[in-house]
Amino acid sequence: DQQVKQNSPSLSVQEGRISILNCDYTNSMFDYFLWYKKYPAEGPTFLISISSIKDKNEDGRFTVFLNKSAKHLSLHIVPSQPGDSAVYFCAAISTFQGGSEKLVFGKGTKLTVNP
Amino acid sequence: KAGVTQTPRYLIKTRGQQVTLSCSPISGHRSVSWYQQTPGQGLQFLFEYFSETQRNKGNFPGRFSGRQFSNSRSEMNVSTLELGDSALYLCASSFRDGEQFFGPGTRLTVL
Image: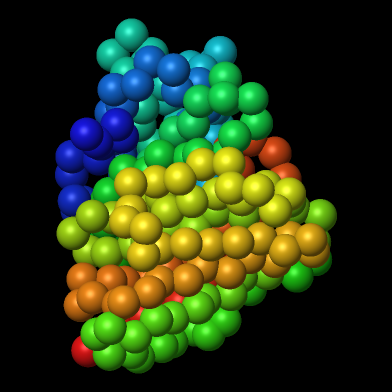
Protein backbone atom coordinates (compact mmCIF):
# COMPACT_ATOMS: atom_id res chain seq x y z
CA ASP A 1 0.00 0.00 0.00
CA GLN A 2 1.64 3.17 -1.22
CA GLN A 3 1.02 5.91 1.31
CA VAL A 4 2.82 8.62 -0.65
CA LYS A 5 2.20 8.81 -4.38
CA GLN A 6 3.87 10.81 -7.09
CA ASN A 7 1.78 9.93 -10.08
CA SER A 8 3.94 11.64 -12.69
CA PRO A 9 7.19 9.72 -13.22
CA SER A 10 8.56 12.53 -15.37
CA LEU A 11 8.01 16.19 -16.19
CA SER A 12 9.62 18.37 -18.84
CA VAL A 13 9.50 22.17 -18.77
CA GLN A 14 11.16 25.05 -20.54
CA GLU A 15 13.78 27.15 -18.78
CA GLY A 16 12.24 30.17 -17.11
CA ARG A 17 8.78 28.63 -16.83
CA ILE A 18 7.13 27.18 -13.75
CA SER A 19 7.63 23.54 -12.72
CA ILE A 20 4.86 21.98 -10.65
CA LEU A 21 5.48 18.64 -9.03
CA ASN A 22 2.59 16.91 -7.32
CA CYS A 23 2.31 14.48 -4.46
CA ASP A 24 -0.68 12.75 -2.85
CA TYR A 25 -0.81 10.92 0.45
CA THR A 26 -3.30 8.60 2.07
CA ASN A 27 -2.27 8.51 5.74
CA SER A 28 -4.08 11.26 7.65
CA MET A 29 -1.56 10.90 10.50
CA PHE A 30 1.19 12.49 8.39
CA ASP A 31 1.87 15.95 9.76
CA TYR A 32 5.19 16.93 8.25
CA PHE A 33 6.13 16.83 4.59
CA LEU A 34 9.44 17.21 2.83
CA TRP A 35 10.80 17.44 -0.68
CA TYR A 36 14.16 16.01 -1.62
CA LYS A 37 16.13 16.45 -4.81
CA LYS A 38 18.40 13.77 -6.18
CA TYR A 39 21.06 13.92 -8.85
CA PRO A 40 22.42 10.70 -10.40
CA ALA A 41 25.08 8.94 -8.31
CA GLU A 42 24.32 11.13 -5.29
CA GLY A 43 22.10 10.72 -2.26
CA PRO A 44 18.93 12.84 -2.00
CA THR A 45 19.35 16.32 -0.57
CA PHE A 46 16.75 18.12 1.47
CA LEU A 47 15.00 20.91 -0.41
CA ILE A 48 12.04 22.28 1.51
CA SER A 49 9.50 21.14 4.07
CA ILE A 50 6.08 22.08 5.39
CA SER A 51 4.26 21.37 8.61
CA SER A 52 0.60 20.43 8.53
CA ILE A 53 -0.25 23.59 10.47
CA LYS A 54 0.68 25.62 7.40
CA ASP A 55 -0.60 25.60 3.85
CA LYS A 56 2.36 27.26 2.19
CA ASN A 57 6.11 27.52 2.69
CA GLU A 58 8.43 29.49 0.49
CA ASP A 59 12.21 29.42 0.07
CA GLY A 60 13.59 31.42 -2.82
CA ARG A 61 12.43 29.88 -6.08
CA PHE A 62 10.82 26.94 -4.28
CA THR A 63 7.32 26.98 -2.79
CA VAL A 64 5.47 24.04 -1.32
CA PHE A 65 1.68 24.10 -1.00
CA LEU A 66 -0.28 21.77 1.24
CA ASN A 67 -3.99 20.98 0.86
CA LYS A 68 -4.83 18.81 3.85
CA SER A 69 -8.45 18.23 2.91
CA ALA A 70 -7.34 16.82 -0.45
CA LYS A 71 -4.27 15.14 1.06
CA HIS A 72 -2.24 16.77 -1.66
CA LEU A 73 0.94 18.79 -1.80
CA SER A 74 2.80 20.39 -4.62
CA LEU A 75 6.22 21.86 -5.20
CA HIS A 76 6.48 24.93 -7.42
CA ILE A 77 9.80 26.00 -8.90
CA VAL A 78 9.80 29.49 -10.41
CA PRO A 79 11.65 30.20 -12.61
CA SER A 80 12.91 26.76 -13.57
CA GLN A 81 16.59 26.44 -14.40
CA PRO A 82 18.50 23.67 -16.21
CA GLY A 83 20.33 22.91 -12.95
CA ASP A 84 16.98 21.96 -11.42
CA SER A 85 16.92 18.87 -13.63
CA ALA A 86 16.89 15.99 -11.13
CA VAL A 87 14.58 13.46 -9.54
CA TYR A 88 12.33 14.99 -6.89
CA PHE A 89 11.04 12.88 -4.03
CA CYS A 90 8.11 13.78 -1.85
CA ALA A 91 8.27 12.39 1.72
CA ALA A 92 5.99 12.41 4.73
CA ILE A 93 6.25 11.57 8.39
CA SER A 94 3.95 11.27 11.38
CA THR A 95 5.62 13.03 14.30
CA PHE A 96 2.96 11.58 16.61
CA GLN A 97 5.17 8.52 16.80
CA GLY A 98 7.17 10.41 19.38
CA GLY A 99 10.42 11.02 17.61
CA SER A 100 10.47 7.94 15.46
CA GLU A 101 12.11 8.83 12.20
CA LYS A 102 10.13 6.80 9.71
CA LEU A 103 9.94 8.87 6.57
CA VAL A 104 7.72 7.51 3.81
CA PHE A 105 8.83 8.42 0.29
CA GLY A 106 7.08 8.63 -3.02
CA LYS A 107 8.68 7.00 -6.06
CA GLY A 108 9.94 10.29 -7.42
CA THR A 109 9.37 12.53 -10.42
CA LYS A 110 12.16 13.15 -12.89
CA LEU A 111 12.20 16.82 -13.82
CA THR A 112 13.95 17.93 -17.00
CA VAL A 113 14.37 21.65 -17.59
CA ASN A 114 15.21 22.38 -21.20
CA PRO A 115 17.38 25.40 -22.07
CA LYS B 1 30.68 19.72 9.31
CA ALA B 2 31.32 16.48 7.43
CA GLY B 3 28.32 14.89 5.76
CA VAL B 4 27.07 11.35 5.91
CA THR B 5 29.62 8.92 4.54
CA GLN B 6 29.01 5.46 3.20
CA THR B 7 31.49 2.75 2.33
CA PRO B 8 32.05 1.16 -0.01
CA ARG B 9 30.61 3.23 -2.84
CA TYR B 10 30.38 0.31 -5.24
CA LEU B 11 30.21 -3.41 -4.66
CA ILE B 12 29.82 -6.44 -6.88
CA LYS B 13 28.80 -9.74 -5.34
CA THR B 14 27.42 -13.04 -6.55
CA ARG B 15 24.21 -14.76 -5.56
CA GLY B 16 24.37 -16.50 -2.20
CA GLN B 17 27.10 -14.28 -0.80
CA GLN B 18 26.62 -11.83 2.01
CA VAL B 19 27.53 -8.17 2.18
CA THR B 20 28.06 -5.54 4.87
CA LEU B 21 27.63 -1.85 4.18
CA SER B 22 28.80 0.91 6.49
CA CYS B 23 27.43 4.34 7.28
CA SER B 24 28.90 7.15 9.38
CA PRO B 25 26.32 9.79 10.30
CA ILE B 26 26.83 13.49 10.71
CA SER B 27 28.46 14.24 14.04
CA GLY B 28 25.78 14.67 16.71
CA HIS B 29 23.10 12.79 14.80
CA ARG B 30 21.86 9.77 16.69
CA SER B 31 19.28 8.49 14.25
CA VAL B 32 20.36 6.49 11.21
CA SER B 33 17.96 5.15 8.61
CA TRP B 34 18.62 2.84 5.69
CA TYR B 35 16.80 2.83 2.35
CA GLN B 36 16.89 0.74 -0.78
CA GLN B 37 16.42 2.52 -4.08
CA THR B 38 15.50 0.66 -7.24
CA PRO B 39 14.12 2.05 -10.51
CA GLY B 40 10.83 0.24 -10.10
CA GLN B 41 10.14 0.81 -6.40
CA GLY B 42 11.75 4.14 -5.66
CA LEU B 43 13.01 4.70 -2.14
CA GLN B 44 11.97 1.98 0.27
CA PHE B 45 12.59 2.18 3.99
CA LEU B 46 14.64 -0.68 5.44
CA PHE B 47 15.14 0.19 9.11
CA GLU B 48 16.02 2.97 11.51
CA TYR B 49 18.35 2.94 14.49
CA PHE B 50 18.51 5.34 17.39
CA SER B 51 20.97 4.98 20.24
CA GLU B 52 21.93 1.47 19.16
CA THR B 53 18.30 0.29 19.12
CA GLN B 54 16.20 -0.53 16.09
CA ARG B 55 13.17 1.78 16.31
CA ASN B 56 11.48 1.03 13.03
CA LYS B 57 11.61 -1.67 10.42
CA GLY B 58 10.32 -1.73 6.87
CA ASN B 59 8.83 -4.64 5.01
CA PHE B 60 11.97 -6.53 4.04
CA PRO B 61 12.90 -10.17 4.66
CA GLY B 62 15.07 -11.20 7.58
CA ARG B 63 18.08 -11.47 5.25
CA PHE B 64 18.36 -7.72 5.72
CA SER B 65 19.68 -6.74 9.12
CA GLY B 66 21.48 -3.88 10.71
CA ARG B 67 23.07 -2.56 13.82
CA GLN B 68 24.27 0.69 15.30
CA PHE B 69 27.34 1.24 17.41
CA SER B 70 27.82 3.51 20.40
CA ASN B 71 29.40 6.18 18.17
CA SER B 72 26.20 6.15 16.04
CA ARG B 73 27.94 4.50 13.09
CA SER B 74 25.72 1.91 11.51
CA GLU B 75 26.12 -1.18 9.40
CA MET B 76 23.61 -3.12 7.36
CA ASN B 77 24.06 -6.70 6.33
CA VAL B 78 22.38 -8.66 3.57
CA SER B 79 22.83 -12.41 3.67
CA THR B 80 22.22 -14.95 0.90
CA LEU B 81 22.18 -12.30 -1.79
CA GLU B 82 19.63 -12.50 -4.58
CA LEU B 83 19.69 -10.85 -7.99
CA GLY B 84 16.82 -8.62 -6.89
CA ASP B 85 18.97 -7.14 -4.13
CA SER B 86 20.88 -5.14 -6.74
CA ALA B 87 20.12 -1.56 -5.82
CA LEU B 88 21.44 1.69 -4.44
CA TYR B 89 21.51 1.50 -0.65
CA LEU B 90 21.20 4.86 1.03
CA CYS B 91 21.89 5.80 4.58
CA ALA B 92 20.47 8.93 6.18
CA SER B 93 21.08 10.53 9.53
CA SER B 94 18.93 13.04 11.35
CA PHE B 95 18.99 15.21 14.43
CA ARG B 96 15.29 15.93 14.69
CA ASP B 97 12.06 14.69 13.22
CA GLY B 98 11.72 14.56 9.50
CA GLU B 99 14.78 16.21 8.06
CA GLN B 100 17.22 13.58 7.02
CA PHE B 101 20.63 14.01 5.48
CA PHE B 102 21.61 11.36 3.02
CA GLY B 103 24.93 9.83 2.16
CA PRO B 104 25.98 9.20 -1.45
CA GLY B 105 24.87 5.57 -1.30
CA THR B 106 26.42 2.21 -1.99
CA ARG B 107 25.68 0.73 -5.41
CA LEU B 108 25.37 -3.04 -4.96
CA THR B 109 25.33 -5.28 -8.00
CA VAL B 110 24.52 -8.94 -7.54
CA LEU B 111 25.56 -11.22 -10.39
